[in-house]
Structures are given as C-alpha cells and as structure tokens.
Length: 395
Image 1: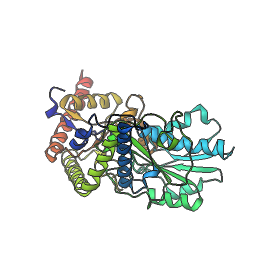
Image 2: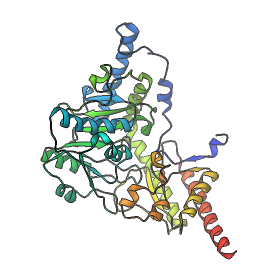
Image 3: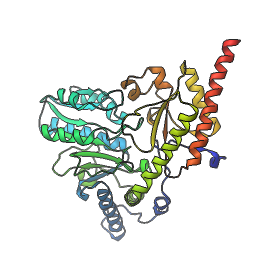
Image 4: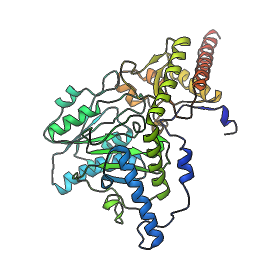
C-alpha cells in the first residue's frame, strides 16, 4: 500500500503484524528436515523441540502435550474430529453427541456439515444477548451420549469472554471432554491449561504477533484422539507432514514475548479501548456497543450503527476503507459469505443490525491518537452515508 503510514489498522483479530523479534528469527537455519538422522536434521529436531517446550510453557502445559499444526482451523478440526473418530472407531460407540455453542468459529461450527460425521448428534447451545453461554442451560442439554463440549474462550467478533473455567469444571464433573478454542483469546487473556479443566485447547500464532502457518493443539496427557492426516510419524503420529520450522520457532518466540510483556500489552489495549469508546460516546452517543455489560477482550469493540438498510451499511464500510481505516464486520474468514454474522444474530440482533455492526480490534502498534482519528473518520463516513440517503429521498 503506497500510503501505508496513514492507514489505521484496527483489524488485529483477523491477523497481526509479527513482532520484529519474530520476523528476524525466520532465518534459513535450521533448514533440514527434522525427521532426518544426520547433523543438520538433528539441529532442526532440536529447534522444533525447543520451540515445543516454549509453546507449552506459554499455556502451562507439558511439551509432550503440544501438537504443532498449520493454523487454528486445523487445530480445531483435529480436536473435534480426532475425538469423534476415536470414540466411534476405537471405542466403538454408535450413539455420540457433541455440544458446541452458537457463537463458535466456523472451523468448529462447519464440522457439523462434514458428511463423514453423518449420524453424529451435534447439539448447539444458545447464547444470550451478551453472547455468553448460559451454564444452567448448558447443563440441561447434557445427555449420557455427550462425549465432548467445544466452547471458545472468547469470541473473535464481539470479544465476549465465555465462562470457560466454569464450563471446564462442569465437564470434569460430568466426565465429558472439554475443548476450548483459545485462538482469539491467547495473548489477551492469561490462562493456565492446568487450572481451567480443559482437555484440548487450540492456539494460533498469527493472532498474537507470530507468523502465519503455525498453531498448536494442546492435548492433555491421557486423552486419546485420532489424526486427520496420515503419512509420516511426525508430531507423535498425530500430524503427519514435514514441520514448518521457521513458523514453529516464530510461534515460540511470540509466546515468550507476550508472557514477558503481558501486563504492559494489556494495559495498552485498555488505554486504546477507553480512548476509542470515550470519543465515540462523546460524538456519536447513539452508537450501541455490544456486550457492554460484561467483560470482553481488552482490545475488542463491537459497535452497531443505526442504518436503515444494508446498502447504507455497505457504503459505510467502503467509506471507512477509502478514508484509511481498517475495521471489519466480523471474522475475516466469513467476510465473503454474504450473510450477517451468525454470532450477532444468535445474540438477538436483527440482520440489519448485524450488517450495521463493525468490529474494532487494536494491536500493540496502535496509538491513542489513532483512536481519535479513527472516530473522526467514522463520523465523516457515517455522515456521508446519511446525507446521501437524504439527498436521494429529496430527488
């Protein structure tokens, strides 16, 4: 982008710019296949295992509980499909139910469309107006056939933080496996897998200033799953394929940096969030902030504008981009779907309200003056849309 310095990037829940330390760590060494039994190969193996130990430390796990994969989508698929296939084909169960929430990422929700899982009973637990799973309602839909509950730690669109610790405790009480998608929450919530009663947990590097192409699935020791990919014996036979060493090392590096600077990073997010909401309330008090009454991710804001039709919402987004502000309507992976956010509609918003919602997600490189400038851009973009509508009516 030729005018990149003037472009304000507030879409960090879609992806983040890697830390400088992570980018500089992506060198050509070690380059050898980590499965090769010669000196260069052993150097690569050492790099992978060193990164595994660091990734494990980041979430409070043991190195042998970490399986590296390519992205959060793969980690989520490996968790759910791995559990289902183990119970169906190894344990021999014919009556299998899995509970997921209506707010889950599409990499969890769309597993229900996989024809390989025909006959599996997927139960969708609803969310309330704040985007949260109700624990009492969740407990009521648990049946003896439920083997797994998969609920995210925090929602990527609204920032709503789920009661993940209580869900983990409920699963432990009911002897049900708990998978937690922590892709959006990692780096913004400090957690320890040993303390949140989860059996499986997904993390992705590019959501927390690491490289694309690296993620991991935490699998508690003793939990059995089957792989998605079959081939070599990499990752303890759970993920065949030559390891992406540079990305894996970058994953480990970003985890170390975030662990070291977590409090400072969180404080910066909160300063940006407070400034943005303050400016928005001052100049556009009619804008509704979703999930305002609950704890949300420190870097995430979901704001609803009162447009009268989807064309205004589309024009608004176009105006924002033209003026140099990058925000989103929701998850980037769903941006081409042509449908309103499944998360917002599950919260009770109308399709128009969902279409009229923007997600603002801050990053460590953003500045307070950018939040002030962003609100100015939003005000101008909104006014242009409303004025255009008035002019059209008068013609």
